[in-house]
Amino acid sequence: MNKARSLLTNWRVIIMLVAIIIAFLAIQPNILNVNGAQLIYLSTNSYLGNLSAIGSTTLTTGSIVTSINGIQVANAQQFYSALNQTAKINATVTITYKNEVFPYVYTTSTVTVPVTKTAPLNSSVIQAEDVPFTTLDYGLDIIGGTEITVVPNSTQTTNTTLIDNLQTILQTRLNTFGLSGISVSVIQTLSQGSYILVSLPNVGESQALSLIQNQGIFYATIGNDTVLNSTNKSEGILTVCLTSSCPYGGETLPTLSSGTYQFNFGIQLTKQAATNFADATRNLSVSGAYLTEPIVLYLNGKQISSLSISSDLKGQAEQTITISGSASSYQQALTQMKTLQSVFESGSLPTPIKIISIQSVSSTTGSQFINEIYILLFAAFIAVAIVVFLRYRDYRVSSLILGTSVAEIVIVIGLAALIHWTLDIPSIAGIIASIGISVDDQIIISDEIIRGAAQVEYAAVKKRVKRAFFIIFVSFFSFAAIMFPLLFSTASLFTGFALTTILASLIGVLITRPAYAEIISRVKGTA
Image (tube, rainbow, N blue to C red; front, side, top):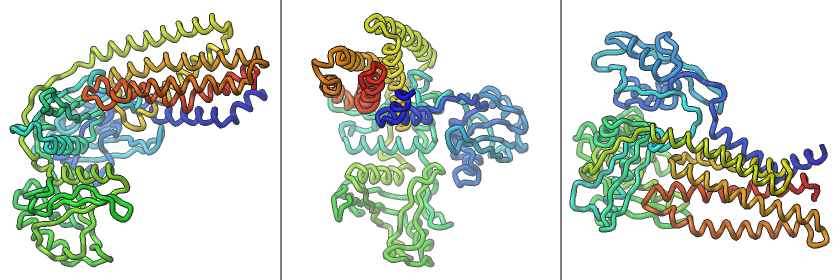
């Protein structure tokens, strides 16, 4: 009892337990067996999507639909069946849904929408899937989806600025649809050319093409007035400056000034947009250097940013406007600037795109692979348990080694959920590979502690533990040095594997290994 109490008050053990609890809440397995159909897509061009965008309803991607017009919905199949039965032209549909406000805590709401010829309610507007068992994002090699390779439809495939800007615009546009696991990455070829690889898990080919090719709908408001609207060319943006030589204000990359990194770039408005801007700001009050109302930017119905308006622009029909911003670090400022530029340009891409290839991936192979992983993982744990038991002849030691390895895996997966890292097959393979490293390190610790308990005169146990951790740290840094370059590989296969193995090793060194050393010391009676 005293040993258990001392363990629960040890700060290393407490840190591990807290990390496990946080990871569990992040992974959030569906232990409450919540039934329904979780929305994965809601068209921003639809009546229901517009209600969601302006905040008139809390129904959005991630909401769990439980009934439609009183018909209970327990899964995606029942969702589409109820939708087909009720969403007839000139009918009214009432959707009951849940939103999570805290892990395992839900609020229930309803929304009623009319169905007309111009505002249908079908699978082209709203899509759902079975409530997933966890909140983890999986890659398309596991759950299926579509992978599209695109390049600028021009001769400038080696223009890194153009490629990077195109990547940012596509990523910003796709993020507004609320789809999980989307990846937009730039791949370099041996000939120094570049192409963009877009991965859309759980998205069909036709929908994926629509999301990529259709122009984003951008508009901006000041108060209740719409001043910019990409659907009306006369109220849009003519030019967004992407180089320092741009005649409409240019582009200034983030520079350090007064402790922050500041940037600016110019945009050129149409005459009508400039007039709209002047009309909307003419009667606004001034507060310091800015007007009392900001300009709010929307992309595909979702608010992206809100910018303060300089008091000098009050009532002015200026066609050339400078957009400024700042952040605490260079990378944050650069990301903020690129995002704003991409939002202003999302009505039209900086260059037409050409689709090189499109591939639909079935989830069958991935599911089979995952099932095999579970079987192999279980077999590996049994084999490790037998070997460790034969080595130490002590079920407590073998149980602690395996239990600590499981805790490490849970923490790694929880961290992946927190940072929204998409788990694909290479990432999962990396987690499995880290189990071997974990067991090896714990064996080193166990050997040092057990030998120290038997031969106290040879060296103090604490010194032996320090020696064990010296070996573990050297092993970790050597391993990280090998894996770190793979993080920047253009092949996602290497990136996912390297990231998960490095994270697992780092969590082991900082959290689980120290906690294991404390636990095994007390179990073997050396502390």
